[in-house]
Length: 243
Image (cartoon, rainbow, N blue to C red):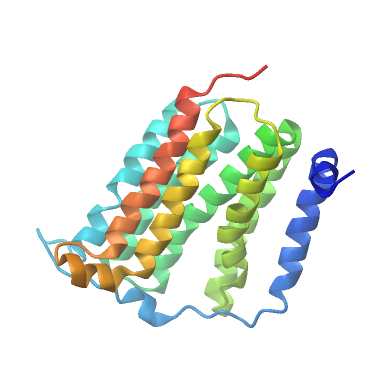
């Protein structure tokens, strides 16, 4: 049996192994404090009485997509948790960008952590085992919340970094290695593409501001991330059961 076949035959063992190895690896990484220059976004203009105008209002698509998702996936707990996280991200991120500081950033990141863990639990439900995915939902969400409380207490972002990036590692593997129960897998890969674009736009915030003069990279990052969430919404909206 090759390596891929071994993973497919023992998916939960593979998932636990991958999570355990990555969490153990955190102990070998130096503590990661929150850089205070993170709060200094390129575009800090006040418009219509709203400070950091574009960074604030660009969160509105999260509220819209989250609300659409909550209506669409009623009765599916993990998916509802994901879309609830997206919906609340619109408010939490707006609050943070109104006056950027660590406390506001906590409320920005909290619903995002909930969304990351919700979508991971859903993917486990669909691709591996429905019962296990549902059973893992609450512990995963609790871990996401704990990672941010730990950051506030110790100024160490290592565990939150795991909460954000472990799903980015696992989800493509789940969608590549395990057969779907529903159609529309390509929407999930489209969402991954939008998310990668969002991270690039965030990184080049100042460079994009200098080039465009109208809008910086960070509000565009919000729009790209919302497009990623919308792609996931479309996956739910158009899916059909695969026998």
